Image 1 (cartoon, one colour):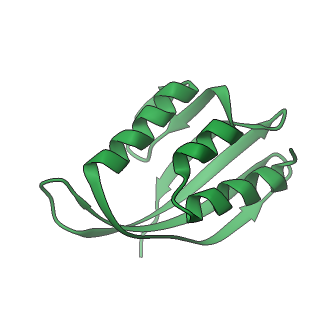
Image 2 (tube, one colour; image 1 turned 180 degrees about the vertical axis):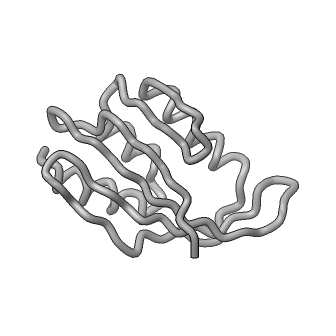
Length: 116
């Protein structure tokens, strides 16, 4: 798959709430994921575990991807999510996800908090 095909498919699946399926289909087994707080996980199963933890510990009220941009070997996605963490208060989150692609798979993702 090309970088554009990967980006298009990831956005399509995430817009449908199929984030785990996107990871299964599009991520390399040795993918590295960096969160905005600096935490890092390595490997597809660890990334899927992180995603599952988020889904299990947050009530998702809305989620959207208003924009994404594709480069030659990378792409970026704007995520806007409104959630209530278990035991917490409802909040809006906006993140920029930056993805590196090699040999037709996502090999690296990094998230950044976006103000405003």
